[in-house]
Image 1 (spheres, rainbow, N blue to C red):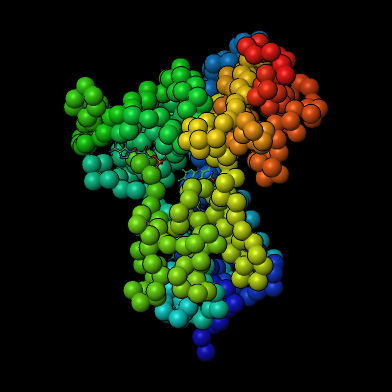
Image 2: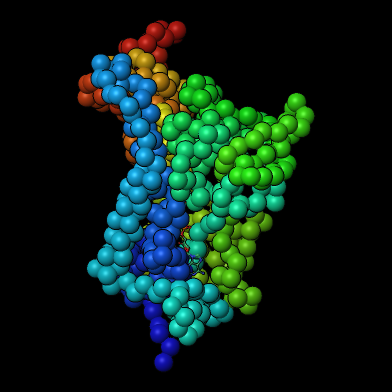
Length: 479
Ligand code: FAD
Ligand code: AMP
């Protein structure tokens, strides 16, 4: 007899594994089909845990420690001789972190009685799922009351720079270099390109980032993006905007990249090239032609606000669907869908999803940018305070950057918070909580923040929206 579950989830990344666990918590019988094999072993956790968020942050942290030891310990009076970098050891540490976390998901599945089916899943008509076991077992058809598609995304391939996994790599290959390349090219100045470029630049590579469009970080508040461009350039990242890569040639372990920009056609030679031009949803071989699920105009699976596809009982979440390609967005959609299947009225607030770029300093934001607030046509106000006016930031020699609030002029409600600076990824959650609770700037102004903390700059930026900041000179008189 065919196996049957209340819910079958296809994909065990942050969207899929979280939805499977939440379904199990709610008393539903659930199977999660995941086909990934990482370093020779079946692995849960998807892109994020295996080749995305976690390994990239592990390498960002290791490379930052090396960079600091080399460049800034001396200012603290600490002398370290012969600072060296053992790249294979750094990669091994990263692999250990990944192993610990992906193993943790497998244990959570066991604890929650989620059945992990190791192999490939394909949605058929009538909410049936074809399962092909990775160990070569027979293909079987599984019955499901509900199906959650969570197959995620894969790096976009471009014909002008074909990944050979030697000289030209994608984001996955860039997490596995065995030595620091002398000259490194990166195609794409998006989040992934900047983060991976930063890792290898800190370790000593000469890094050139080629970006087709003229705007730098168009999704980020442009005051913050301008500051980021300056700081990253000072760190040695050579970011060339308006430069579209038109061809590559690999010869004797080096790659020559041709690109066209405002000065015409140019070329550069690199030891390694990272292609980081975005990610595309994995819809191939995920669904039969007659399953009924449709794609939208950008080839994502078409869903409504509750991640329902056009087929009743079939949902799609995470990188497979519209919205930012972020692990926490995938997870929240996973929880929402599980709870909706259970009959609850859950939803995701798509207006309050934080974004983070883990460069140094970090860049983080939530809510509307100043450009978006302006486009609304309603009066707005901003408050901007630099970390240079923060005692804690100065004490720890981390005083680059700023906190910026964007608020509604009439209602005083917070609309957005933007941070470039130390611990931005953590500080931004103060803005997230304020946004979700509909806080006004006055609410934040009236709170007593601890001293000396980086958070004081959040407080000061809230005060600055009404010209009340104490530690910077503001032009207008206080109200
Ligand atoms: P995925 O994580 O892609 O998981 C989908 C899984 O489904 C995969 O494991 C795949 O093997 C499996 N699968 C696909 N098809 C099938 C099938 N037919 N049968 C069985 N299994 C299948 N996001 C952040 O929020 N913060 C970050 O710091 C961050 N850093 C990143 C760094 C890098 C280098 C990269 C590449 C991405 C990063 N992301 C980050 C993005 C994040 O990884 C994704 O948004 C997130 O993983 C999406 O989750 P998902 O569950 O939708 O899909
Ligand atoms: P993201 O989608 O945020 O990861 O960013 C990918 C970036 O790659 C985008 O900013 C694109 O403009 C850029 N890009 C895509 N194709 C090319 C190309 N051929 N040359 C240079 N940049 C590119």
